Amino acid sequence: MNIHQTLFPSDGHEANPMFWGWPAVPETFTLYDKYSGKSVTLVLGETLWSPSIQGIIRKFEFLPGEVGLFQQTLVLLTQANFSPSSFYKFTYTLLRHWIIFLELLETKPSDIISFWDKNILTPDLAKAGKSILKLAARHSLGPWDTTHQKFIKKLNTRESSKRAVRKERIANRSKLLSTSSQADIIRLLDEQAASPNLEEWQIEGLTALALGFQHAIRPVQILTLLTNHIQLIEENDGKLACIVSFHQAKKKGGRGDVELSRSIKPEWAPLVIKLLNSANNAARTRIFSTADSTKLWALTKKVAKQFGVSIQYNYYKLRHTGAQTLADAGHSRTDIKNFLGQTQLNSGNTYLKSSRKQVEFLNKALGTSALYSKLELIATGKYVTPKELEDAHEDDQIAGIVGSRLIAGIGLCAAGQGNCMYDPVMSCYNCKKYMPVLDPLVHKEAIAGMREQVLSFFKAGGSKESPAYLQLTTAIAGAQRALDISNESASQK
Image (cartoon, rainbow, N blue to C red; front, side, top):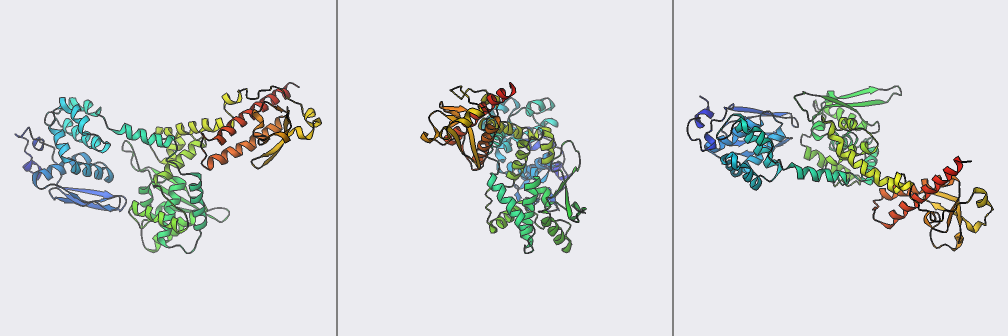
């Protein structure tokens, strides 16, 4: 009889969850942490466990005696096949909210929903609670049996609100790096990658930034890179191509290790090569000497600050930004899934939806949507031919600068441009005194100039509610209409 059976006999004490005859667990349990590359043996019955979780030593102090042994039993029975991070979340939640979980087990199945709605209010509590109830139902312990499994599965996970907030932040693009922040990263890496004076901690911080920014590689994948994961290939021009391979972080259905490979941008490859050389010189199998993701990101922020770049965001903004960039560029769900190293095809759905919203927004501003191209925004309905424009007085001919382009000859002004108090070209396309010329080329040039202004406006953080945005919207829509009429006229000749 092992220690578990001695303390938790299956006969009697049916009202106390501690004595429901829980399955036996081994007296020792080994937990392997990929981040640190260390294994820690946990001993059943010891009140203090100190495993390495994501490169950090975590301390779990259990209650003394039978209660603490029961706590450890629940941990091992539910978390033995899960990752150290899941092990940590469950154990931390269990110990912090022990009374709630004990009361959960003491609650009858018929009363569980009301208890759940009153006490299980966060995703971590819900996940741990469902794991414990599923365990009891699977082994028909206490009032629970296998018929309750579907019922337990349907209990609210409290994830919907959290997921909705996360999706909304992606949809409104608040989880993305600004264009200026991306430019800062590129400049920083371009300038420092070839620097001969970097210290190893600086190289580690910059390399982590490069891997995360270019390929959205997760912290655990970065920290567990081995020297044999780096392949240097000499190309025809004599330059070295740097290929990094790593294991897929999240897998479904026991697929085992799935290896992914990425080619590092040539300008940034020297960072990886320097780190590889440092590891070889130190007889280290791992590329990074750092085993703590929090510390590694701190190094990234520190080295960036040294070179004038402020990083006020977390690592995962790099992943979201990379995925959204692919979606905005027209890539498929499969491309996004592969880029993120995910197993589920729907991983890219939120980014694609966000991209479609952004496209609708841009189309409206750029005058390319079907709705805007059909609007009758030119009130006069009168057009002039290129010959009529050429013969008209110079003061009546409309010209101006749009963006970086000099636009001349978009039509005539009935009041004379010299007498107009508004900016030429931009204001003309929706003015009743404007008479467009039937020349597609000049309107295309005007639209191109205004589109440049729109894109610059967005990059500068402009709002769609601002008057400047509205002016751009209506002006481009009017120019698009003039272009359509000009094209129709040209096709009829």
